[in-house]
Length: 485
Image 1 (cartoon, rainbow, N blue to C red):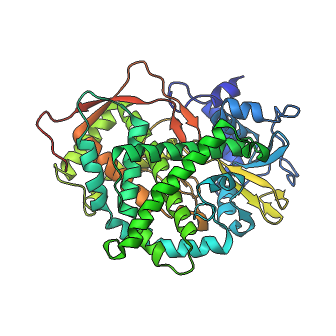
Image 2 (tube, one colour):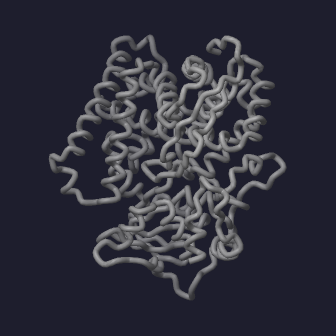
Image 3 (cartoon, rainbow, N blue to C red):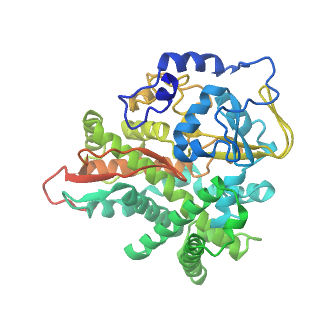
């Protein structure tokens, strides 16, 4: 019981801590950075996690509390098997083995069944593409997301986020997750697509992306293909949502095609590329829009949630933005000076890693540590539980941005991978870092966000780890009239 109570300690309630002595002792020999120590003499087959029920397997605890269930699995070894109905899944927990899977043996894995379901956004989009088509598309788009190119995007980010934040009103109550989704969605669209939709269309796009993401996760966790083809209300809603996205993005592409000299962005890059069909361009732009908006938005929501709980950290952030920006816009030159701001983003990415479930599937027989994975093995790993491992981080449930300070030791290799690793590492990581730092600084320059008294905010494992409900009250930091930066 003590172990289960510890595992279910919530990240949003630091007062309820893990049994750190027990878990740290376990982790210290299970997943040392220098290598994984075998739990038994023969791990050629990974052990089966306890608690499997007839017919449904481990589906009930997974559906009841996905995040706690995956955290519990870390007690059962570096690699462990679970079943979801008739489907068997291998869960990789050890950071050294995750790193090996994503880098040294990456060629022996495809992205797996969750990403198959994400093809609802477009079967050829870069996030779900495989093999040579993935490599070709990555090489095509990488220059537009290179760190040097991202520096040139900061002004457009500022011009998008600044007026939106300045339009907030003192004492208004924000649905912070939705507000941050709109901010990040509009930033992606303005920077990468040269498009700035009005409020109504932007909301419709956001709702459509949410609906498709929800459907993709539901189909991944309940893999019954026949249900996906039935004319149910949910399936009709997904069809409507994908149609709206294709129409909205199609209009952006048409505008670029009609006046090619007016644009210099990812859409124009794709249009100029040989051997890329119209449907592939459409899929690629929709995929970028969806992936680029959701993850940064939930990180921002969690960041301001934590600042609302830690006034001392909020005061340090205000001191930094007041000193570095002094009321001026965020620029590419000022962005690196926001050191504490970036530490806040880093710690939020650690404690609330947006990805709680990442899938892979072996294409050949693979030896991973002491375990042999046959061809066709479905594999998952969890950045969320990896980043909360007490064997890797002291007091892992504590929100502590100073753990990323220059005098503190860095985590072991493979212990902090919010954007993945290897050839499939998220190509938009530099964009996301710049965007998150800029949004944090612009909001903090003008506003305090106060939590709703008595509200209990808990992490929910949907397509990303988002707050169950997060409403915060705006308080203007300056009583004088504020203008958009």
